[in-house]
Image 1 (cartoon, rainbow, N blue to C red):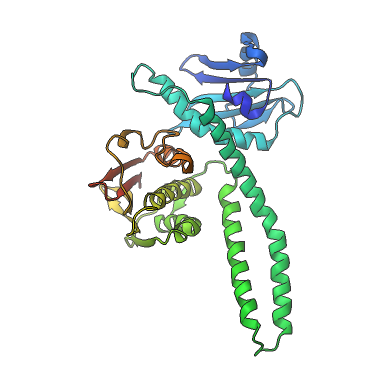
Image 2: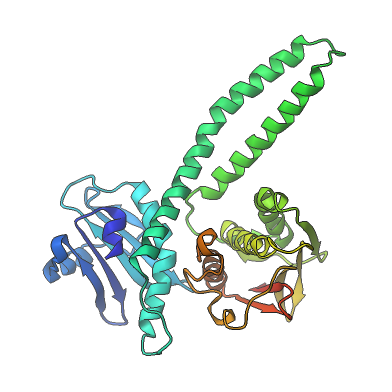
Length: 346
């Protein structure tokens, strides 16, 4: 089982809560060992479905959510006290997004064209993505200290130079660049923080602005013209701010990638009311979506970008929208771009 590999622990299992019972979907131990008594003991000892680390840090639990409901539970166990940390919990929670898709596929395995499992290569790739994400946050944190040192020296030099010194403009340019690096690292740290899901009143214009600011370096390097129109006086929506921002960022990145090989690169983002719901439209002038790919565009690990793609961005975006009781769809016209539509309840 991949959960055991992910956590590097002795035992791991997936449990699926039912109406009156709990079913063990999968269990893995050393050398393929399966201990039903241990599985029952672990489940009976749980206070709740987590996310949490319990039992002298020997037991780790993370719920798999879909539409706000628990569809499964990921459990890791070690006989050694102190085996798990909050870092392990963050890693396991990151994997629950994919586990949701796996459990959903397993629930409908009777369909001939339904994918019920992922290859070792794909799951290993996911583990690398999680690791890169953790390292990126660490990198952003480490950048802050030398950056503050650079800016401190720049201020000292500026204060020492005469007002008409020719070099002053050069140091001002360095200062502006260092401020931009500081802003990017702050966004990266904010975006990477593990958060408990929490809804709050949100202005849709602010959510779109946050997503565009975060994706700006990615969009700017591809020379894309961004057009934004948010209708005035829109109602406030109740949403998890960072989850919606992440969903929008994922779609923006997908749109930017779709325009990599075209000359006219326009990214359009609009927001307004439609049929008593808040609707966000994100359009691009890329190559569009081939008809045979449209049914799989939101599937986990499905990508048409080869090694450049992860196959997780749109999948996660759909999971976020579903959990907010909304809908997401995509359409393409004559292979001249794509338009994603997100509808959220008000």
